[in-house]
Length: 388
Ligand SMILES: Cc1cc2nc3c(=O)[nH]c(=O)nc-3n(C[C@H](O)[C@H](O)[C@H](O)COP(=O)(O)OP(=O)(O)OC[C@H]3O[C@@H](n4cnc5c(N)ncnc54)[C@H](O)[C@@H]3O)c2cc1C
Image 1 (cartoon, rainbow, N blue to C red):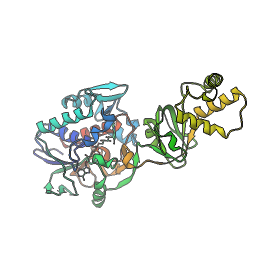
Image 2 (cartoon, helix red, strand yellow):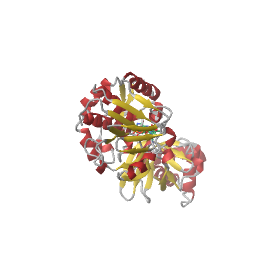
Image 3 (cartoon, rainbow, N blue to C red):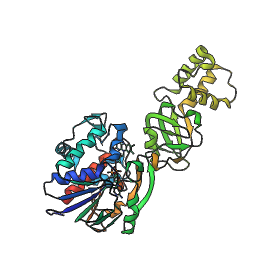
């Protein structure tokens, strides 16, 4: 759609909404842009990202990291790394890369959001906070302050994860009434609740190769696990949670860099040096006690070599049985959302051509590591180019 002085309403003033507003303003076509958010500040969720450091991108950009790689690939092919960098430069976003994780140069989410806020003000973009969008009908956006008419409405209202940070999913039912199909919503990137994690393990951290399987490996990643009072968290587990199904099992190799035989040798040495305290070099106390308790029911193992091999086997393959994902309140993304069949390759609605969709409200989610904020940016680029 080409046009001058178009009135564009954007619902959601967080990552995807702010990017969309700024990229449209950068096009220099003089659009009248109005951002709405029911939160009391812009970018409220972005402030919480990356443990306050804001891992806003993953490089190289990887369509494979999303639930629908071919859809993301179809968007990505019109952008590419070079153009992406040009947009970041145009937005004045300076960054650095840690491994493949991209952070703002400030390494600070608050500074990142402040920068975006300054740009919104500089570009004369109108932002209405504490303004909940209750309904949308064509180009008409209804909020408590009244009815606002737009030529184009961009939906950037996120999912329903961590509603204390703004996005509560309330607009999905409004869209449902307007003929959109919303695929089932569920919490993603969250801890897994396990019936067999005892409370005593809460707070324990340990490195582990995490494998989720249901007979065949569904997901595997090396990382740190964090035990909770009734489940397991950590980035590798949160990523694995995207593949959780009832009946899947979680295997932890607590010493992935050591072979079972070498671990048994170390355990044997510790058994002869430390006696009953032989697990001290291997795990903090609650985990050591849990392992000892698990081994208790095994046949009495009189010899050091048998006992060390028994514990090595346990530590190389500690199995838990997840029963469910934790809820939306503890998830980083929402799986499901506006059906991709409802939009075209420009993320324009197939139901109402005045509507565009960006960010997490779409049925797209990715692994931890900057993929989700990365999609917020990619989708905003696609939509702003389509409109301009
Ligand atoms: C704790 C945490 C850490 C994370 N860390 C990372 C990370 O490091 N890297 C990464 O890539 N991703 C991370 N994510 C995921 C990432 O933050 C989201 O995927 C991303 O913010 C989605 O952007 P969005 O603009 O689509 O939606 P959101 O950021 O959720 O924004 C939607 C906005 O719409 C507003 N809104 C919703 N409904 C209405 C309504 N009816 N009226 C008015 N306003 C409305 C909300 O208030 C909100 O501000 C993290 C998420 C969490 C919760």
